[in-house]
Image 1 (tube, rainbow, N blue to C red):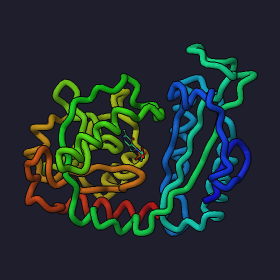
Image 2 (cartoon, rainbow, N blue to C red; image 1 turned 30 degrees about the horizontal axis):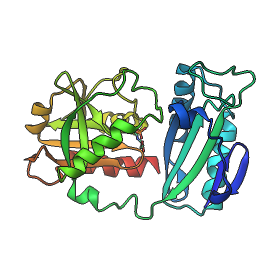
Image 3 (tube, rainbow, N blue to C red; image 1 turned 60 degrees about the vertical axis):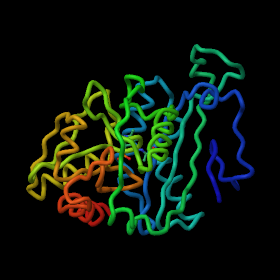
Image 4 (cartoon, helix red, strand yellow; image 1 turned 180 degrees about the vertical axis):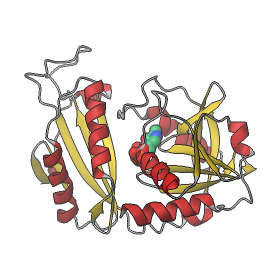
Length: 281
Ligand code: PDD
């Protein structure tokens, strides 16, 4: 695999980052995951804008312009012959050559930028989307700025492991009784013909897929309500689903062992998946 590190395209074994990099020592970094279908980037502009916002919120300097970023994405897709898959991008604050809680001077410290591809043949035709996934509810104990896409992913990883241990596929996180989001996706329920998902705030990541799916839903005259819902309300819903760059729209058919609807994907989530794949590729 050819990867990109600080201005160079290298074989992955040749890539090197300092052990003092703040991304490594302090999770002082942000990331994006952009999907590729038919060799084309999906929603690149949205991901680039959110990356800029994440960096701004953390007073991080952008290592490259958006135009350069687009070129790097395209070059990696080409060099690695990706037709279906993902591109992972990470920017960290870099390092001043030592460990220090204070941010180093941005004038003299180069941020670190790394990109690599992940080939996922069959991403659009994912069989899981036909069966649906099972989730469990877990407490959301993450920090209060989940709108910033930081590489601080230990708790979401632990959540995923809790789900696996419970025989499920993923976890929905709950704060003050209300579902915030999935470990790596936004969460939705459907009641009657209304799609319900938590409103944007610092409590959740502002999903790029979420924005597109809600836009397509509204364009298709579907009803959308942006409000919080409890895990109990979700268990009584007609349908449930999640969205992300890596899963698009994925039906949820079980929550804490309780069947949602008929226990198979309903009408709304598969239709939204179809519309999303059609409109965005
Ligand atoms: N995760 N919420 C969280 C906590 C996420 O980590 C993600 C994405 C989303 C969905 O955002 P988007 O639609 O922009 O992908 C919501 C990526 C895919 C990941 O960590 O791999």
